[in-house]
Figure 1 (spheres, one colour):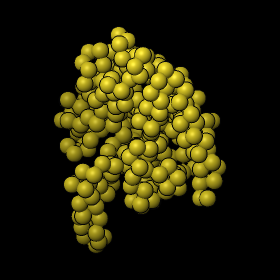
Figure 2 (figure 1 turned 180 degrees about the horizontal axis):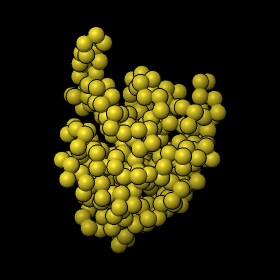
Figure 3 (figure 1 turned 180 degrees about the vertical axis):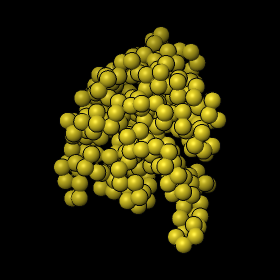
Length: 276
């Protein structure tokens, strides 16, 4: 999916919601726990209930890898079931030496058919380049994440001559931006970092941001939207547990849709009047 197609979806649906399919097999509703393919059946119901209310789905691969081959099969079935109108993100956080990254890129872009994959930039350009070389695919680089451990490295204060204090994540994002373009590169910025997000948007006015952390992690949809929305949308706000685990019974998908609708409606208002 290219940038034009993504922006069209945001404008047509008037939202920028990404539903996170972080499907934990231990949290399936009781009627699906004994199902031979419970993870996919759960995902299928969530997708059916929310596909008109979002523009993207993000699959956290860890939840699928943790259950072995059945997990990978459920992941593949899920990716194929997501409509082609939606951006399909593999939240895999890969990043390794070039020849290894090339295999990761092939895995997610060619074998499984994702549109985007999250990557870690610590190993430098050659660890990211194989992802960026794919046409009409997105490389989503970790910038400033929402977890407490982001203080350990990302928020270290650095000094560049003549520029005063800066943070390590600034240096990383500025460097990475030289390797790609707003048409194939996004950044992850945690929704719990709304204060820093405004400055980051100022530095990167044309790039899309993936913003996880709204919902259970405490990020404010209104705050991050006002800090980072652009004329093209410019952001994808991810909500996972708050949506997919909204209900625990057989009507779990309907309850998920209610929560997704709430996010979508708020996003519509923010798009119409972002500075309100």
